[in-house]
Image (tube, rainbow, N blue to C red):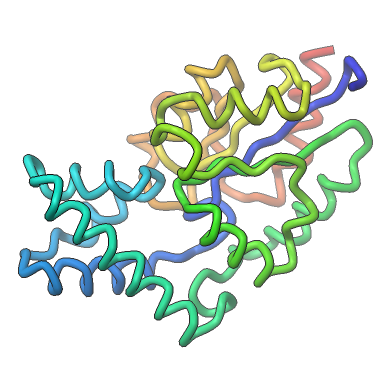
Length: 227
């Protein structure tokens, strides 16, 4: 692996795709099925990025393990039904300009792209294949194989798989969990302003970005500073 190789790891929900409609609908179905009162919209979107068991524990503090499992199963079933009914483009549309920027970055010499998401492998594969993006990412880290964010295990695996040093890598995400994870892994944390956590929650970001079209130029500045 060349010593000057660089890596940009992206979160998925709230960063590359806007899946909030199906997330909210699936949560509604899961809580109704369990006979529980649905938390508010902001509370639900605030846990996006966590693995589902951890997310349910935050939404229902003190929840018993069997009920948490029921909620997770109900959410997964409802979410997959919605995706099958609506298709990926409607269920989880790409944010504007995401495809163009990803393709541009993928074509940059010496730059690798990765994903780190609270989604399952099955869910991520369906999403990436639905959008035709799977081939762009050299490493894909999912909830099946790691502790939930903000634990840095996903990013450490991404660095190991690509052979890139942490100081030459960047994490791009929309939640506080992404920023905390990046810092714990020794990576630069870039927070985005179009996702599910407001700017106040992105206090651990090294840099805040409000337009993904600015990312290539921002990365170029970062690489120049690393040189």
